Each structure stands twice: as structure tokens, then as C-alpha cells.
Length: 305
Image (tube, rainbow, N blue to C red; front, side, top):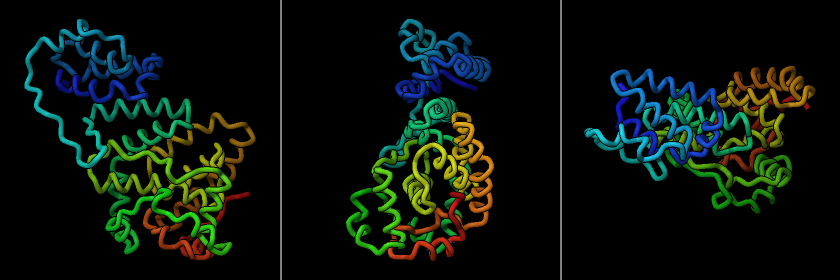
């Protein structure tokens, strides 16, 4: 049964999340979630749930007086679980679902919103993270990653050293990709909504190695190659968010969409499903490795030109 304390905690956690400024404008999403909240509470006053759901989905529309039905009754609210690691924001099942819906809508409308894509990835990852963690534990290289928990940003990677490596090496290819695309490894958001610290690191590792896949295949960061990488990630790693991202194909130009469907997705399905799980690769220990040899070892090949 949905109770007043749960709704109050949902509001306090999610009220200021940017996804809800959009949900307030999305009548269909707002009405659907409000109806679900009404159905879920059963014995609790429908008017109270509807009022609080509006305050979650439409920040600024609920006043203290409007919430009087919730705040005037006495409940044993208990306490929210404490954060499991720095930056962790514990969520209830309800909160996770609402955040998943809100971030999905915003990410679809503006795929450049990395914060929304990140929230969607976390709230929909589910058992995929457990499977990936287990795959890492089965690999000597993966176990070392979980033990060391390396991070990827400009303070942990010596870019000048990578630029000094011979052409054709993995390290030189990666830094060359960063330079040509004018991106930095410092742009990845930290994980917030995954409760288990080890699984949170698995998600962080995926997030920070995403650009490695771009560099590995020589794919840039504009819309079409980004969707090609997402398709590869779905078949190789299994994150639901990467499959959802393919919905953005409707925004491509017809010729681009045709290329995605006829060339990139068939490549992603075949390459991603037959190659090694790339989350088990300790990329930072392979900077000097020949790129073509790395391709061969991992069982991957470049996508269509």
C-alpha cells in the first residue's frame, strides 16, 4: 500500500530533479503517473495522492495548504536508508520508476542531455549490472578492475604520454580520437541512484569507458555514430537504456536512418554478440598494444565506412 510517508519522501527527493520540469509539461505522462499513484494507494485518500503527485510532477503548483491532508495526520515515518557511498541518493521503487519515466522523456526530446541519459541508465539497469559484475568476476582482467577500481579522467591518464606513443597503438588512437572530436574524459556524471557500491562502480566503469568504444571503432560523437555505438553496447553489454536510445533514430535524416538500419545495426548485432564483453577489458593497461592486435584479441572489427 502506498502511504503518506512514502509519497512525502518521493517528493522531497525528486522535487528538484530537472526531469520533472518537463513532466509538468507532458500531460500524458503526468496523467498516467498520477493515475498509477491513485490506484496504488488503495486505502489512502485519493485526493491526497493526486495532490502530492501533482507537486512531484508539476513543481510549484502545490501549496502547503494543498498538502494539508498529508501533513495533518500522524505517521511513523521511520527513516530513509543512509547513502551507501559518497553521492548516493537512495530511492524507493516508486521514486526509481518516476525518475526513469521523467529521464526517458527528457533524454528522448534532447539526447544531448547527458544527465538525463545517465539517470535513465541507472534507473533501468536492474539485473544487467549483476550479470556484468559476474562476467567481470569470471575474468582475471575483470577481477583486477573490480579490485583496483580505476577511474578515467584527465588526472589519471597522462595524455602527453599517450601522444608520444607510436602510431597504430591503442593509446595513440584513443588520444587522437579525443583530440579530433574535441572531447575530454572528464565529462561523465557520477553514479547516484544505484544502491550497491560495487554495482555502482560497474555502472561508473561503463560510463567512463564509453568513449573507448568510440575510439576503438573510429566513430565520432554526432548522432548517427552515437546510435551505432549504443546498438553495439546493447548487444555486447545488455543495458536497456542503450536499446531505448535507438528510439532517437526517428530524428535522423532519412539517409542516415537507412544507414543505421541497413549497415550499423547489423554490424552491431553481429560484432557485439560475438566479441568479448568489453567491460572486462583493462583498457589502461593496454595503451602500448597494437590496435589491430587488440581488435583481433577482442573479436571486434570496424563498422561499415
